[in-house]
Length: 147
Image (cartoon, rainbow, N blue to C red; front, side, top):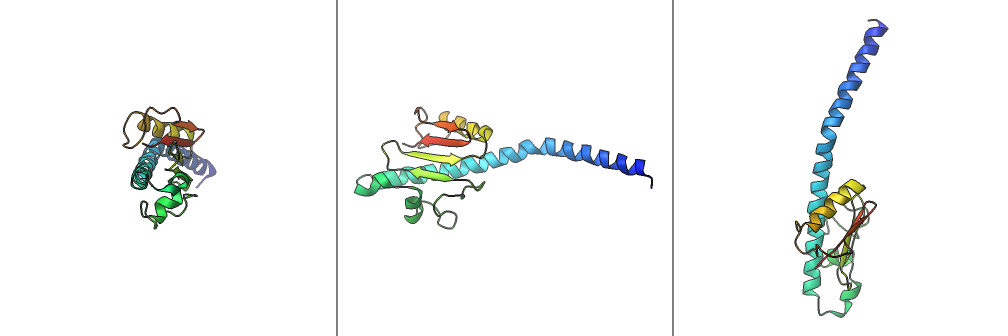
């Protein structure tokens, strides 16, 4: 086999591979975003329930992600303290007892973060104050206020 045929074959393979990547990359991102959305909704609901159940407790103000796990609001098989524990191995934090109770979620990139923020602010998620001015994306980290 001559070298021209080999080089031509490699060029064709590269073009087909790039085309496949270009076609499939949005599907991977969409699937990843949906997984992140499901996870953050779960954390939001856990924090909101924790806040409601413990509303009269003196230690509520200092509650964090670990309290959600330790008290059974989040699955201890999946989570410990929220560090590198999201579905994309990034950080999740919760402050369900704060005056402005928030959840922060590192979405990995600004595009995914803005997609999640849009979902939160258009009322797609229960237990989120969709109109709160603190809801935002800082680079790739989503912050939402829970009710």
